[in-house]
Amino acid sequence: MNTKLIKYIFPVILLCMAFQLSSCIGNLDVKPIDPNFDSEFDQDANFAKIYSGLALTGNQGPDGQPDITGTDEGASGLMRMLFNINELTTDEAICAWVSDTDVYPLNFTQITASNGLVLDMFNRLFIQIAQCNNFLIETEGLEDEKTALQRAEVRFIRALDYYLLIDLFGNVPFVDENTGIGAYVPERITRSELFNYVESELKELENLMADPRTNLYGRADKAAAWMLLSRLYLNAEVYTGNARWQDAATYAKKVMNAGYSLEPNYADMFKADNDTSNEMIMPICYDGVYARSWSGLFFIASFISGDMNTLDNFGTTEAWGGNRARPTLIRKFTSNGDLTNVRDTRAMFWTEDRTLEIEKPTEFTEGYSITKFSNLTKAGILGSDPDNRYPDTDFPLFRLAEAHLTFAEATLRAGGDRSAALNAVNTLRTRANAGTINDGDLTLDFLLDEKAREFYFEAQRRTDLIRYNRFTSNYTWEWKGGVSEGTSVSSHLTLLPIPVSQMAANSNLIQNPGYGD
Image (spheres, rainbow, N blue to C red):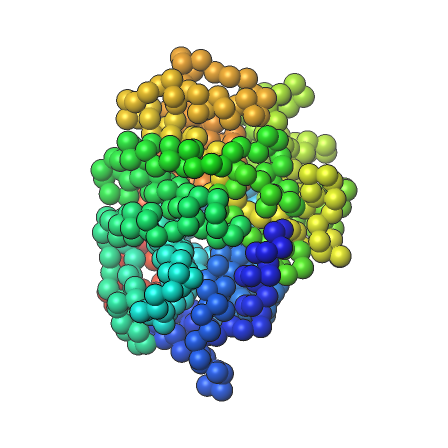
């Protein structure tokens, strides 16, 4: 983990946290919940808290003083929830934990408005938005260079939160620094309106954020804004009904030209010292000593079990035996599931004492295990935690490879330069020793499969399948819809429900179709 980031961002949260928020979006009171707490605004502590909200679950790691009360704090972190929602509902991952009544149904794309994970995600995003709004209110009128840059980054984090709300929930409450504080009940904003707001914010931030690769590691720069814009535009047809393919290609190309470079060895992108990677555009940062979380890449433990020699192979003694690959993911690397002769270095799976097929979703040994993430450095050195539990590995929220595949897909859909799109794909395939493809191979179907090969278990698959109209119908995989061979599910599941408690708290909200009132 980058020492500068840890010293700058995370310890200040533990020592100097200035406020805590209610988890109910119906009441956006940002005053301290402890009346004896000194409410004087600490700018750097609040700035740190906003970044830490991407990684941690409260003010005391790995648990304690949680941001969201009344829930399992360890399961309420952003990265872990994104994984569960965007991977378990798809053709990539399946979880054995039948006792987790909020997570297990996601294996079968079964979601209700009373699901606790859905509520935690909704609360997590709006808590972060409220923190961002508070920071912008408190720093209004300050004109020094440091504050100006912090304000731009805070607006970026808020735009990221709203992007995730667009993608997951659609029509949601809207609050910014200019709307009510305290007992104010937010108005509802439509998905298209929120799209326009996020687009406008990101376009303005282009000129306010640090130039690419000039900011402290872990903090957003212009390339992060461009990457988020390209992702927003790539899915614009889903979000608004109007395709923005050329815009997606344009901003992906800006990222490709921003000075970042691909990690030469694919596996090194997911190791304990991946903070040194030139491919990393925007990480969610963790550290085995200073930034511990049950929700971060400590969640690596859910991908492995004790028979996998966890400390030697993965740099952690933890082994939870929960999440593994569905056969459909494996078959994107080899049609028969045999990985013996697969040259693609992205095929990082554990097959010993595992079966390809999954007859019982509750059996961890049914389905190949994932070896992609590790708490070992490139040199094979253990992470910094002396107990070898909590990882230093950062989660790549945005990395350069995404710009390559976004550019290729958007260019192909827009009828643009096929040779440029082909080159963008083959650059990744060459890195992976997967072999280059010809122009005739470059199809949208191929790109959807290539996205899975490059980004499996990185919490993007649900969005990709929805964009291709393959999430609910036109494509099946094992146990989709609760049927072993898979079946289509209702189209309303492309959006998550507004949680029932939020519907009760805010009369301005309208439940998403298919989930009742």
